[in-house]
Image (tube, rainbow, N blue to C red; front, side):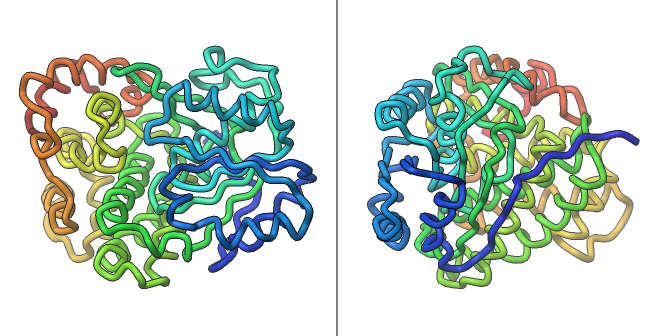
Length: 382
């Protein structure tokens, strides 16, 4: 057996921990800090506990709040420019996956040694980077524990940068920051985190026992707490379990990569601006059903975590799991069909064409997905 495992250097789980953020940057040697976030986080006042502490420690802090979902190249370039103009020496990503992904690239690119166009793909980052701290405000992407950053490079394509240099020095999991998350965002990001764990456990390449353990514990936490977090948003215990589950899912899939669900979801997000978690949710059941012949034993094992008590053969149990997950999104109040987000049959060939560009993800599918397969899967989801 041989495998390589990467992880975030330090993870702090602490309710109200955002008050420690300034001290964390000081511990990294920061003299000028850039916080990368989005307008929603800023408007919600989620930085209110953290910012006064920077003043107390006499650490100048600049805020870049122009991140948007599925960040395009120009957002990253604008954030890098702000970092360079202000001679930033420490970067904080504070928000959802998009803010954290942008922060990772800013910490790397603001040193001026590398260009974004040169580092797409696996292992093309030379480093070094600035000190980096990531603070998730949603329980979904697990970006605080992954060595990847996803960039929208055109209307039809997203590209990933994958390197251990993108793992932060510190990840802060403060469940209080997720208390105000709307129910539909909680639901979509929670299903996104579940997809990470499911695909990590069933990946065709780089599957390993450490990632398997993390994926299963992630699914236990997520499946036991997502409904509570959606229906009772002030349940801090459920929120904390979701945040930890998403982080463990991130640790799993950064070492055992995701596959067909993400490959089909990316074009939905890029072309129709559907949030990433919802895009995953819309194609999850069709892709899992497609994989049943080759992945049923693994799905059955996960099924006993997500819905204990499934009976029958492993094929029976895995089919029951797919049916359960197909209905789960609707129970949480999410759209369940592609047509619900404005996609029509006329869009499917283009979506399938775009999905075929995601070779980095498609290669991990338990069962090979061809163009014709992608068309059929999108039609099933329609």
